[in-house]
Structures are given as C-alpha cells and as structure tokens.
Image (cartoon, rainbow, N blue to C red; front, side, top):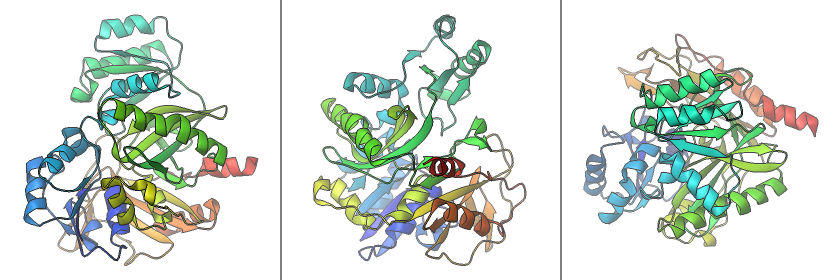
Length: 426
C-alpha cells in the first residue's frame, strides 16, 4: 500500500516510523515532513493547510490511504474534501473536529452528555468577561476558544492576571482568530492524564494512558508549551480509573458527536485531570497527541495500519489491539526561547546513526541542508527510550540524549518525575 502522512512534527515522525514497520506498506509519502521523516518516507513540499495541493498529490500518486497528523487541516475540513473526492483518509470531519477546534463547542457537548468537567463560561466581550471575573473563585483558567498550538491556556492566580490574559486574547489578539472567544474555567487541582483512543463512530479502543509535561520549567513551572516530554504507561491510571474514563468520558463523547450528525472517525484525545480518583475532562483533541504519540506508539504491538484501516472501514470492533509490557519515556529538546521566539537553522550534532529496539530519536522541528541536520522549530527532537520500568526508561532516555548538541538546546531534567513519585507511594 502507498500511504500519505500529513504533518512535519515529532508525532508525524512517530506515525511514519510505526507505519513503516507494517509488511503491507510499500511506500510512504509525507507532506511536508522533516529531516528525520525523510529517512523513512519521501517528503513532499506541500504545506498542511494547502488542501487542494494535498488532494491533488494524493490523486496523482494513487495514494491508498492518507493519515492526518496535526489539527489544522482537520479543522479546515481535509477529511470532508478527501472523502468527496473518493480518497480514503484517517481523520474526523470538520464538524467532528470541532471537539478540538472550539473549546466552547466541546464544553457544550460535555455538559449535554454528562461528561465530568470543570464549570466554565464563554465570552466574546471583554467587559462581560471582566464582570464575571469580579465574583469568580481564584485561581481561574483562561483558554482561547480556538486552536493555539497548546499555548492558549493560562492559569491565573489573581484577578489582574486573569484580566490581562483575557485582554491579550480578546483585545490584543495574541492568538488571532483562536482568541475571538475565551473560555473562563474553574481551576481543578489534581494530576493530569492523557488517554487517546481509536474510534470509528461506534466502537472505542483506548490506548495506553500517558502523561505529558506541558510547562516549560522543571517542577511544572513557567508557561505552557506544546509538550516537553511524556511517559507511558502512567501509574496513575489504574484499571478501575481506565474503566471509568472509557464509560464516563470516551463513549459519551463519541455518542454525543454521532447524535449531532458528526460521527467521529480517527483518534480522540482526552486531556484529563484526576481529582480524588475521579476523571474530569480538561480538553478533547481530534488527533494523536504530541508528544504522547512518541511514547504510546512504540509500545503498540498490533500493526498500526490494520487498526487505522479498521477505523476507516467502520469495523474497529473486529480488531484486537495488543501492547508491549514495557514503559516508554520521551524527553523533548527545544530551541532557546521556546515557547516564545527562537532561532532556526542551527546545526545539530551527535544524532545516532540508526534507531535501536530501545531508543528512537523522533525529529520534531528539523530540516536538512547539504547533508547537515538543522533546527527548524521550537521543539526540535524527542528522545524516546523503552525499558522494563519507567525509571530504567527515564535513565536510558537521558543517557541517549547526552551526545546530541545544538546551540541553546534546552530540555527538562525531570520528565517522568510524577510517575516515579506515584510508584514510590504505592
């Protein structure tokens, strides 16, 4: 089969890497790809928001199946356009993808379906938002309604901070159209958990629970990023908790979308806060998470292509999904300045010549020039290590990243600390 993967980050590198292991795959293309993906697939210079260009390429190359990585093309309706053109694609429709592209839509769905979540209000008027802030409890969470690359969430400890956050979105347009509306949300104290699931509109198969590290600084300090690292499986997710998440969060969301006439086909990502043993939904995403994909897919035993085809063909109930009995830890290496402005085009040295069964370096923001690999994004690389325990995987990941160098390279030194704390308490 000829596959076409859309995207250029670490998530897409992990997808290409896993799909390339399928004996049924003859060729993989990726648009636009990166330097790491180019070692496994033919990269195509088409941007993820160029829907006509992507569709034209898929037609010209007689692509058998397209897999969408990032949220932007999904929110623009790429799945709708491909299906109209009789092209097979893995990903939800534009309407179903609103569960990610509009936080207010997701909140309304959660309330309607009885999915546990924080209390919230949505505003498009700064004055109305300020008035509501006068009487709300602190801290409060201010969220841009639309897509903001994981950075449109600000936890505010004071009323002034909350007002500044609202102003930055509604008035200063820090996140452009994504901040045309804001969601003000109750702050929930607890521990975060990510559960991604394959869904074909009716059947839901959860993946191994993971936990990512959104804050830039060690000890979970500083501004939110797209993710500084992840690990799986998360010890927090007991079998009992996983059952609750499936019954109280994932299935109600899938049923709710179907009731709105927008059945969900693809990967549903639930970002959860676990408070007193109960799951509360912070957000839904309409695709694989990043960097969670870099720790979940390496643990997948079943052929990923088989699962994706079962979703596309609405027969997910006929698939058994198996997982390795190991742990995985991914440490993200970023450019200096991230999540703010950062330089590009810096040479990277010390990259391993090949992957092994226990260590994979996923490229997130890289490009190649005259044989040299250069930085080309805020998140540059994700070093993923597998081992029998989380502690061993953590140690292997940090040992493996030590030789990798580029100017201004930064990474958190405490990825998976929560897991090790949870394990020590049990």
